[in-house]
Image (cartoon, rainbow, N blue to C red; front, side, top):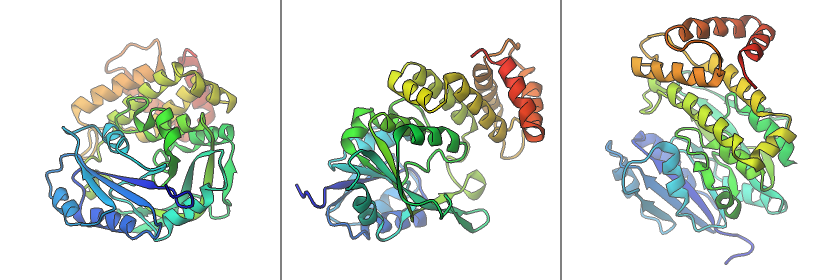
Amino acid sequence: MDSENPLVTVIIPVFNQRADFLRQCIESVLGQDYPNLEIIVSDNHSDNGSREVIDSYADPRLRVIRPPLHLPMVQHWAFAAFQAKGEYLSMMGSDDWAEPRWLTTMMSEIAPHPTASFAFPNLTLHFKKTGSTQAARNADIPTQLIPSVQAARQVIEWTSHMFSWWVVGAVIRTRDYFAVSGIARYATVHNGDYPLSLGLLTRGDALYVSKPLVNYRIWGEEEGKSDGRRQAVILEDMIRILACIKSDPPVQTLCASAGWSLGRIRRRFIKLALLWISLLPTRNGPTAEERKRIVSSLAMLLSTRITLGLFMIPVFMVLKVLVRLNPGTLKRVVKKLLRT
């Protein structure tokens, strides 16, 4: 064991990724100058040629694995992370990529902070549709240790559009990762980042590294992403997260200490649904089956006395108008509808 440079395992889960994106990701991790590195590339039964790209690399640091059958996204990430041998682990989306000194910088920052269960860097966001880029966080925010309660408050507040931005490129203490059952702790399908972040914060603090060390690609079905249709899954994950927080005393206590009761978290999720979700039958909108799942999930989130069925759709559309025109009015309406 190298006490000065502990082993870091970088997990790259893959399913039907574009070849150019996948190569950029793998090569950016292989190009790290950190001296004690294990790379696990897990192929989730791709059928578009991704396996051929993966097999083209011959490097003793790189290990290729495959689950026994195709897994939902979060479960696949969990399967891959379970193989980690390092004292630290990190997860990298197969369409993202790291800057050359990402790991060396992250490890030099987390080493002096033994209370941090994980460290996460600033990111450069790449919007494929427009070709534009921007930093995920204000460059004026310095590198800092964020106490667990304050970090939990930020997780809940910020993840309105940053669900993945705490975990991609983060360096996590492996003992803490497994102590909270990892990324699959709440059996979510798409969003494992949110519960993992909260779980890790029951073990320690968070360390923010201000340098933009990882590149995060934002693209969707319109730009050719194979799993870009996610509205129904995101809502169903919200239901799972709420149910699991209710039965998870350490996380519930952490959230309450951060000023977020279960009722307030539920209202937050409803507001996010109103901002994100569309029920209109457009070309890239939800299918008929997805609309049924969305309506069912919205009814569960609202926990209202409203009759289910088609009546939920006009109610949802009215609430969408309210959230855009008058957030204060929406807050009063939602509080009346909710049983908290």
